[in-house]
Image (cartoon, rainbow, N blue to C red; front, side, top):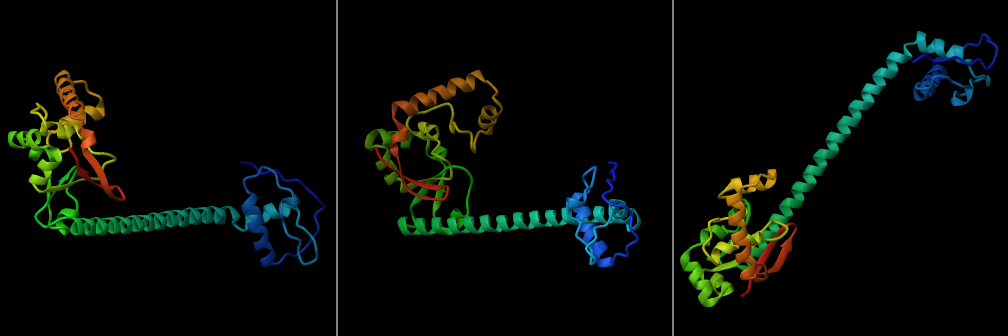
Length: 252
């Protein structure tokens, strides 16, 4: 972009120090995007109180390599900003890791204080460090979906059946339990795990990409009816929460 020169005074032979030229460089650097400079852009007065003409400033720009120096400074600023961003991101990751570690520690403590060594947790999702550090058994809901469990639920109720099988809590990192996954514990269904989180990932994939499958739609309708029929979502009571980790007890 061409810079216009606006004369503000007649040229006078004045000798300027290197330190003064350096001060003028930083004023020019801050205003170099302008198409026209003015004396009131901030050029400081010299020792004798004079302000150099803009013709003089532009000569310094061309003769002292100000443009190349400014480009180098821009690059350095950009690199420093990138370094700062990387540092901030690394610090944020460390903080998140520390928070996650604290949450896991609290989860381990809760389990050890509230569960006997031979008791189990129902869990949704993937295995977590809790399975290692607590020494407790973690069981997916689909594993309990058999005729013996269904008969016991009909006979003594859901909560008593969980107690009978020594299942103390449902543990989930989700916003709420996958209630449909418990329908197969009440009645036999074609879908062993309606959420598709572990056993049949096609269900989850179809839901995510919006693929309509008539058979799947009918199977899901079946488990939804069972969930409503037995009011399954009312059978879980939130007992404790640590971060996103939730522990539910059971009721009939």
